[in-house]
Length: 377
Image (cartoon, rainbow, N blue to C red):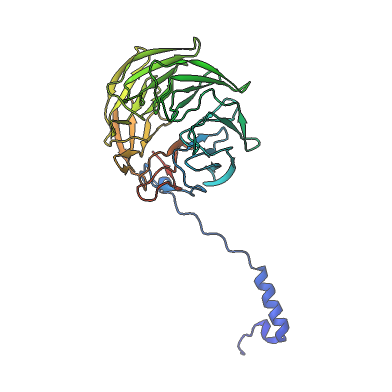
């Protein structure tokens, strides 16, 4: 039996070439390679290390805000004017408009109307009083009225009445005791009393009864142990005792039991591993168990199960990769798997999936970071 010959062997050379090209054009495009498996979805007990697409630019002392649609908008950071949005379904970033001016050490608050209010911060040559908001519908930033006082390293807290409370901060040449209220319906600012102690780099937490606790921070000359509570109904401030230890740059997290967990920070340039609990019912402070790692410039994220995830931070000149989990029921800390790199001045946002999105910060060797990680506690 004669050997099989292809159809092209019986065709003129030019026709055979055209046929071959046509067959090549009809071949389907090769599929992209599948993404690498997520170890956190493979049953690997991980607290960190699952990397996703990096941001479009490196950032530190920026802000990350969970939007109503479950996505996360990242705004500002040193030298960063463009914003971007992270989609948990695709694990990719898309542009989200540009701030009127770059800023870091600012605040970003999701308001009840779905917009994100950004206030103050350091703008390169000056401390800012300006404010602007992001509209998820138009995907653009728009200016709103400026604050009465320029400030950086302040706090912003969304009140139950929909207003935003701005507290303290620094002007670069002095420390502030003033506070302001933003009314989203009018875009206007109003004074909201004076703290008994001027402070910046403090922590603020909304209490279950609608009041706001402000604790610690750097005072005029030294770190503070004092704390104060703001009553929005009376528009007044009241001292509520002192923490067991002064601290600058701590985090404050309101727990399911109504108490507030204050963690880490620094005192006299030394990072702390201690923690404290504030009880609004008695207005008193008590020491909580300490973390394994000293850290300042870290993050603390309240999880859906009531536990608190603390990540990264700075200890001396070293950026910390470690992750710890606090259990309020037992007052104990558990060390989880570390992040892939140490970082401070980063953000950590709880996603609707239960994972925590960690973005940017300062690294040990490469300065500001573009990298992003997903923690699965």
